[in-house]
Image (cartoon, rainbow, N blue to C red; front, side, top):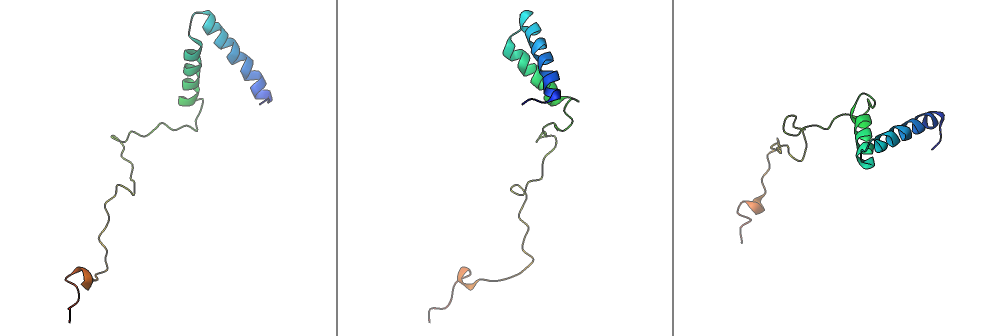
Length: 85
């Protein structure tokens, strides 16, 4: 991808990464930290932190109780069946 913004940001990130590696830091760790900073901070306002299912339970239809039907009906086959004669 090549856009004016990409062309401006990329060499600066590359230089920052090179400086960190030159200072003795692990390259993959630096990339992971850069990614974490961008993904989880004010740099990326579109990202919302994951919900904590214990502190903030999410309503889920699979976990909701099934309400009783307001309609009453009987099924003779399940309540003793039909007479044999």
